[in-house]
Length: 123
Image (cartoon, rainbow, N blue to C red):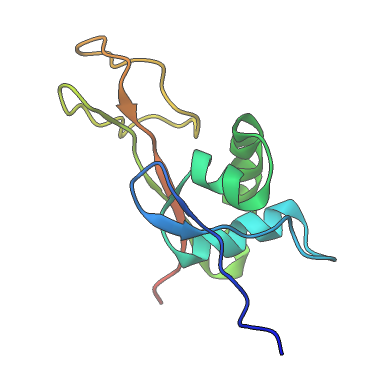
């Protein structure tokens, strides 16, 4: 008799415990796996890369495609902007989905990464 399956958990960059998924299931693309993860809640690019098993630098290109493809599906791509750790500057007007290099106000390089999610559009 075998015991229950063990869940593999990891600590995300934002300090939240997340369940680590294996690589996308058979028949599931990387973008589908990312979309599934984003529907569960806010995630950083680093957390997404760990969940779906791709390098963090590749996540932003997948997120760009997902952002443009959600318009006709009744879902909305939500971005919680990056924020400077030192002065609290919020990168609200930043259009790119990658992490900023440094704060334009205080020049600090410690930046909280942007967080992403997918929610249903309100009717």
